[in-house]
Amino acid sequence: MNDKYLREFLDYLQYERNYSSHTILSYKEDLILFLTYLEKEKKTLLELDYSFIRKYLKVLYEKNLSNKTIARKVSSLRSFCKFLQKENYLKKNPMVLISNPKIEKKLPNFLYETDLEEILSIPDSNTPLGIRNHLILELLYSTGIRVGELVQIKLNDISKGRIKILGKGNKERYVLYGIYLEKILNKYIEKARPKLLKNQTDYLLLNKNGGALTDRGVRLVLDSIMKQSSVERKISPHVLRHTFATHMLDNGADIKVVQELLGHESIATTQIYTHLSNERLRQVYLTTHPRAKRENKS
Image 1 (cartoon, rainbow, N blue to C red):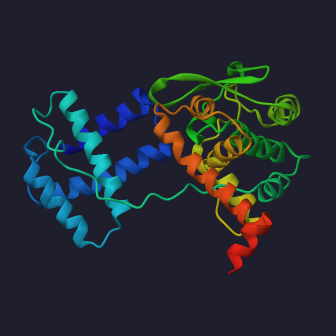
Image 2 (spheres, one colour; image 1 turned 90 degrees about the vertical axis):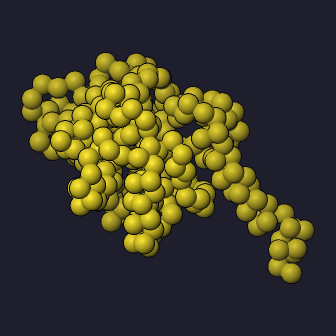
């Protein structure tokens, strides 16, 4: 019975909330852990209450998991219980009084322009897959879109200078792009995509077998590119999204514009990039201003 509720919730995330497969997998793993504990305790989901949730959290803490990991599991469970209540499976939401553990807020990772340029130069622009890989990098960096949004782009979503994006909660927005992305986009559509295409599909990005590329496929592409790079760090699609936001703010973009382009509902989510940008300004100041340099050495 518990599996039935989990399947319904995961379908809800996929078809109604439009979450990426990567995000859905994270929810699934968190909730399977909880349901396993539930079964061990001979309980059903419909019997959940505050005291049982507290007991489960105690078990998580005893596993010496980090606060960040526990916070994610609590968030997954909170969304699940909210869904169960919405569907009238639960009369009361047992997560209402449960708070997340405090976690240290870290600034998001981003790439400096020199590292970014090196990574962008790696794909072989003389092969269909190389052109596609170059396009993936440019799309993520030039628009700041999420990987789940990237793989959903269809040919008719693209008009000159902008792309229609289907974001979280099936909310549509437009992102913009300039001449660099336009050149590689046209090259891919005209020369590379026809060679990759096996079966008719409207999706922009194709895999080596001619089907639609998945978000996991994008991550594998990035991992392969980084193995050829001298940049000693792991990057993900989200790092390129962070890089987009940081470079926009570093170059004077209004935070509300960046918020709109990123598809953030709240400007508070976007504000973390201003802290990162301010840290970048501080580092430049300390390393370039004569008095700041002398003061920094003392």
